[in-house]
Length: 228
Image 1 (cartoon, rainbow, N blue to C red):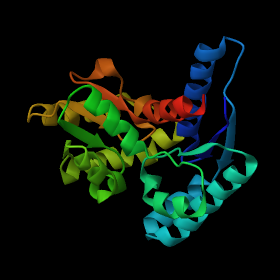
Image 2 (spheres, rainbow, N blue to C red):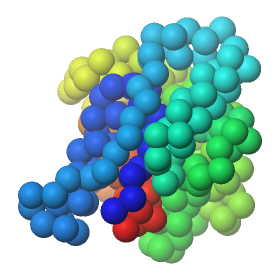
Image 3 (cartoon, rainbow, N blue to C red):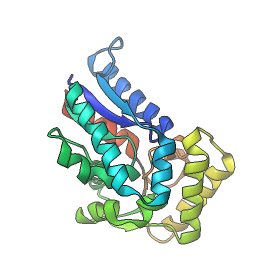
Image 4 (cartoon, helix red, strand yellow):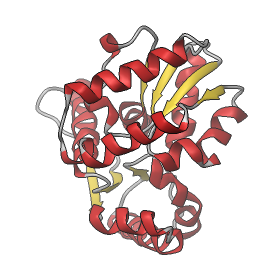
């Protein structure tokens, strides 16, 4: 197995999930005693979230690109940005490294197409739901993207930053998420993208009536397949 580079810390909770999935895949592939070859650069989520709020994506580009450079120098064969939202910086990263940087939306689009779905809900931070960087990729694959209304987007975003990023799982928040998903399923959505890497902590397949797309697992699995 070749080493996989992780830009982590965004948040620690989601990075733990990436690490767990990669090691589970390695154990299944090579035997129970084996673990994944991983190189990690963990950035400070406090700094990242502040710069996001301030709209300083120029500085975020620099932070993420420098993290990627360090991973390539350390011997990583590919790079995963362990956060959906921070794929806003992927162009800046790709300019600075020569190894593949796997886009989470591309990997997710492939899985949606495998299930032959054409209309899906996108849940995530406000940046992911409202900016075009994620939606454009899905639409380029012929997938119709549905996002919640403004009030519901605020609920989803607040839960991510105030609860899930800190490892807090709240039953009321789960109910709110399920209600939001149900409203959009009633309008014809066929599946739901858990487009923030912490949302799979809260929402499971049994919670909803349509297929879920756990972007953390999808993204990590894509990198693992390329590393073997």
